[in-house]
Length: 509
Image (tube, rainbow, N blue to C red; front, top):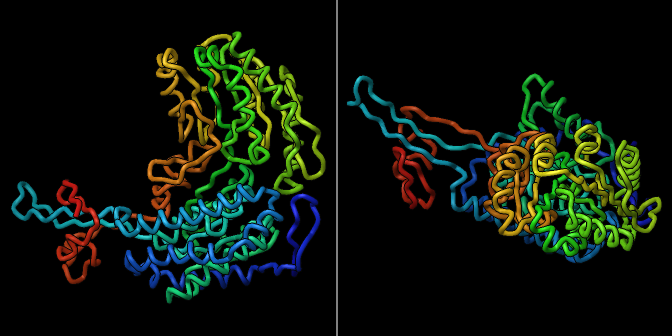
């Protein structure tokens, strides 16, 4: 295939001019350029690298309304959502610019020599984090800006000092191409090597496979399906030199409705839940696909209100026809599970639009059939009616790993919440109370990750400043002369504004 078309989400039909499909030769050349740029880019100072990230933000804003219009056409998402996503994209880049300037990511440590220590002297030891090398990033379908070409994975890898090769998502190639041009403009304006950022485009999975398999790629960032993430992991692990794949894949994000909260506001919670469930046609990785509660009048009120809201929900355009078809198959599979009852469905969808669906089952039936716990990517959720707290706890303990877990609770529920919290900690990367999981704040304390299959590595996050750690590795320097040491580890650098752990004591300059 020499070219392909962008597809308009609302019609499922091609639009715009034909787009070039990159080849395996293009992959190899992009990786060669990234590898050639690595040493020069990783040697950039904190201020230079921070200014580069800020310049990317400026270039993205300079694209103007054409970026929003392209994303609207290719994703079917509304203008307000995409304008907010552009703001988040720019905000992420500026957050990492601030992280780079402050230098904490370097984790500088100095343990001075102790030549007179008995029974053995201690050598001079110094440590810093360095970038791992060129990184492959895969754009996500559901966030054409914030999780795509210049999204959090790209921002954190560039902040770490790693050149980036992006495999653009075929669902929004025009949007991705505009952002790629903005990043390339920032590279040129900042006088950096061309290979600091490369962009590949095309619909074939072979393109992404070739990228991960290239020996010059040292890590991978991916957001997408479990099948896609596992395929890339297999390729990465089969290489002569295996590399880490940081994949965000599958989560149903359980919402636990505790008894006193249900008793006090079950009806209100039911309506608010559907607002979260149907947001963005349910195409959020944090979508609340599972509700757990103990039987009672409060739960009945919740289900009645949720059913009414689902019935009134209008079908929404999904990102692609393929995602719409997969959603329909997932809904049909869930509906066919023994013990599952369809509580309500929204207005009927069509080839490009998905309808909202609410199911219910018992705790006993849910525990007997693992298929009920699989992600259905869209506005579908299942309520599990548990006999008592013990059964609810067993259901939670049997879940796969999750990005989020939510507790709706009143003060009288505190004891039950405290008993459930240790179980939830083992299952989720983020635990929240009295809210809904479909909002992810970009900040220092955020974790957007979790145990498998939510992600391939529960020690990491793809949102927030901690995301930079995925693309760094530690190097220790023993008895290296001052004039040979990296600048930031020399005694003369102390006081340059970066924090250091010196002989076990944190020094904040």
